[in-house]
Image 1 (cartoon, rainbow, N blue to C red):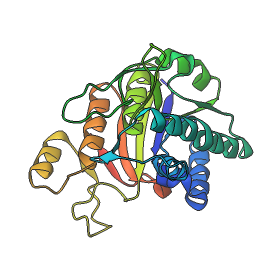
Image 2 (cartoon, helix red, strand yellow; image 1 turned 135 degrees about the vertical axis):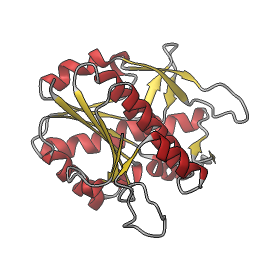
Image 3 (cartoon, rainbow, N blue to C red; image 1 turned 60 degrees about the vertical axis):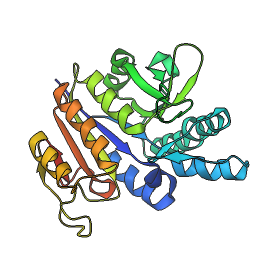
Image 4 (cartoon, rainbow, N blue to C red; image 1 turned 180 degrees about the horizontal axis):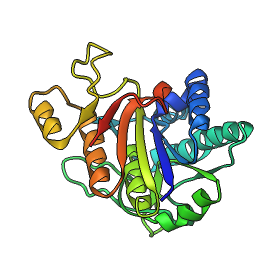
Length: 255
């Protein structure tokens, strides 16, 4: 099977001109089939503020009421997504900006209310890999924004890490998938105060021990859980690294 590299990048990287330029330069150097999943939360927060809409977060997750949903749809599916696509076209990469709504690509369900009502936030139920397959095979580079739909006419704000992981799983039947989560650190750190204390490889047993010792905590826990689920579903390799290190083989390899 052919290789497919899926890169997930957070909003901070794609929203600042210098870091976006570096990211897309490194992304363009990746040989073969590739796909990009992006966030855009900071831009959404800034626009909401200008429109007088309060941004509310719980445990790092955005509460998405009706007005906030309009903002994230405009920002994620419009401004951020098309800015990336335009810059990739300038580099000679034939990119296609998409959300999970387009072509019924990603169906989700509105998150049930438990301790917190997250509003129009979606939990992914299905990614239709067969929709992306012909684009990827023909050399088109999909650029996915973190929006899905519930098949009842509602757009849902959905975690970009989850979209990347579920898309990787859906395409693992047709490609040797390498999934790369990019964030601000060089990898998973043994000591958060030491930027160079990167853990080179991590398996489930080691992960459980490091969580118990509170070395791995916060948002890194769900990121790594996504990574292990992807491996279990047939994804060949998951790497957690800095955007500037794409393609250099550095970071933490999850096995």
